[in-house]
Image (tube, rainbow, N blue to C red; front, side, top):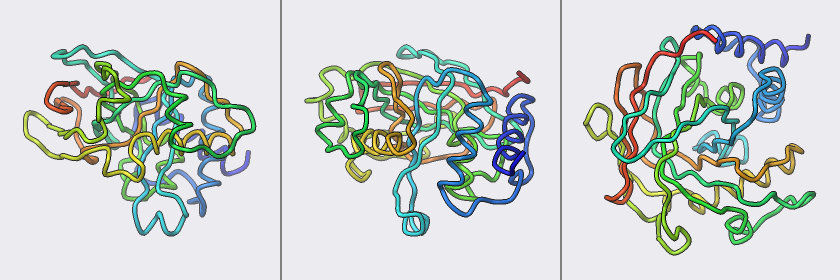
Length: 263
């Protein structure tokens, strides 16, 4: 077993047992390509259906080092959350946990085979719905965000589920990317922002994913979700806390984090 396979299995074992990792489980990769190789091996070994993909930001100095402003990881679980409902969402109590306010884009058509470059308009044409929601960012590795994008990519993009809220009506003309979005933990606001502050906004995240997956030779499927990036920032939380996201004053999605159980 080479080191990439061994690292993938150590991450998966920690996820299966809902245990923590005190340090990166192997020799630290030097490149994002090596980290995606670990991710690919973990996806194959996990053996569950990929329901979507999270897209996260890569900030300086890492963006300069790796030549990208985004990264991606698979999503294997999702739940629906009606307005006003508090939905339990599992996190790794001995690792890292956060709830991130995000616009969730549903893929409506499969990207053309062999196409490796997309305009923003072409990317938008492949999306059929936009919802408000929360990405549950969680990993057994407590230091995952401190270690940077290579570590994040290695462990499913630091994802442990998706909470899908209300659809954005008439999303193309809604101006949703300019909506103010706030994140609250136990009722206290901890972050605020807009999707328009991202390079090329939420649709830019979809374009990034379509191009990345073409290079990785992974076929995206209609019905899969794209979690387009933490609008109000990433704020660590713990099991038992309530994370709420408010979008444009009219949309709310809320969850209570709970300790993941061994699988």
